[in-house]
Length: 577
Ligand code: SAH
Image (cartoon, rainbow, N blue to C red; front, side, top):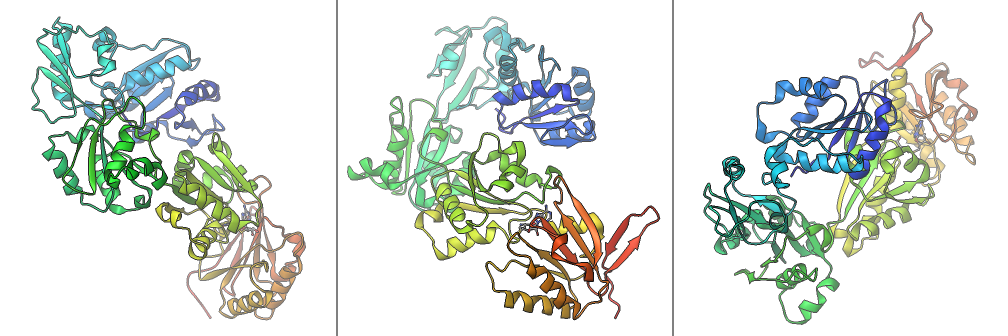
């Protein structure tokens, strides 16, 4: 089974409604649309061939709402390696046909069935073995791992030629299939978490039934050794389970990575009943995992380490239903406005998070990426309580994005979150993974819109005197002017705060020429974008509002007027006195 979220690729606006239906059954999917022909898509591309080939090379499942021929011709140069190809499907623009083309080994038929079901049509599945047995031996359902895929091809053709197969072990998807099952069959399908010797006449599926519980820092090698000693297959490990206090522990991450499985965590409260019966923390976790659902009961607990317990459940374990994941907090910057200035990393994070925390206007900037997420809106000024709420939420295992406009580290939420961590820390926050994802700041967008006014040394100063006294701001403006820095003024004015900008100009005029170029940029990347160049002595509060950033040139900053009336401002990199 492939784990990457699919890309749905469309060439015209007509395909959007079919694409939306498909997305409703594949929630993580990204919608790619041809620039100029589509709108409201997640990613807009200009070169169809390059985009498709790049996604294919990354192993992204591809759903093209277009003719099969287009997909085949585009991907033809890349079809050398059958084992590594992601699923590729063509869907008719009117939703009347779903054609799996490639990726038989990576679950294309399953994907085709799900898509076809959402469109109320039958998928055009052409894989012989699949039609005949209504099951894909090559791509078992989640929770089962085929240990010897190289033997499968001959095995399936033997079945198609009339051979019978006996089942050893239990797997409903096999026993309920139309396989020619016969206890006296020559072929065998074995379902086992044990390490077994592989032979061509026996397909071995390892079910994800093993829970590894870890209660203290231990080496990956120790866990691997314990598993080998117990003659258990690493492919049957379903997850690594640990106390919530270990969620940020690198050893746990290393173990999970070695087995390529999720980690899930428990609060002391969740382990109480087994701990009070005298079990070690590792055992209590193992028992809690295997008795998490009434059908799961621990079949065995084996371990020679006091900090590790291994439990085998009678049916595959779905870690996503047990305990909680590590809480995650992403502090992200959306850029100044439009989606073209939002980083791919931020878009990726927005797709994965469960919760969005932020000022309403900023959450609105996120657009359709916010669909289906829990929104926690707040007033722009309640930064500390917003940061605390986000951390508390993440500590419960949610994946929370704290959303700022521009860059989250520039006059925004990142510092607020770290301030709260520093001054009001709670022990449960220690388990949270915290990540800051940068964005394009207003000053960069303003600079780009007009040329390169920040092309040499510069600084940023916020004119808001809510969090710092005006005397400090005034001192900084004077120092920056003396140092001949170009200056980006954030928060230049607000409804209640207008005199500061005039004051700032007056201080600057003591050091700079009245005709120093000043860039006034409002609503960058948003509707109503306005960028104009004025002179320093024309800088009055009326030119700005809360959504304006102002760039003041240094003594070196120059203006270029082109014949077509266009104006550029730049600060040369070379300094001349
Ligand atoms: N983190 C943001 C800044 C937040 S402070 C960033 O990196 O851009 C808020 C100030 O940023 C506003 O008062 C304004 O000065 C500036 N700003 C934010 N977005 C803007 C936009 N789209 N256009 C112009 N200025 C903007």
